[in-house]
Image (tube, rainbow, N blue to C red):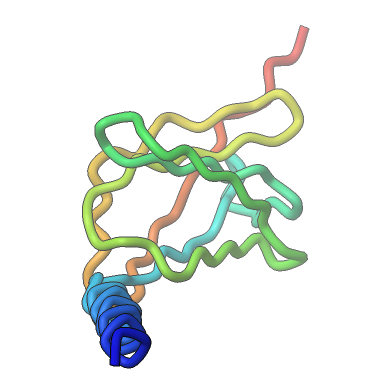
Length: 114
C-alpha cells in the first residue's frame, strides 16, 4: 500500500513538472549579418542576451550569413554580431514571441583602414 502511494506521488510530481515545462512559451530568433556594403558575412559570431544582460548565448552565421536560434523563452533580447575585429552595435529589446520567428538584420561597421 505504501509503495503504491509513493509511486503515485512520484508519478504525479513527474507529470506536473513535464506539464509545467510544456507551458513555457518559446519562440525563435533568426537573422542575417551584413557588412557595411550590404554583403552577407559568413561565420560571423552572433551574441544574444536577455535585455537585462543575463543568459548570454553565442552562435555563428552559416555560409549565407544567416543564423537561427530556436527554443528561446519569450521576452526581450539584445543582439550583436562580430567578425574580423568589427563589432556591430547592440540591437536592443528585440521581442521574441511565442511560437513565432523574429527576424533581425545586424550590420557590421566598415573596416578601419590605416
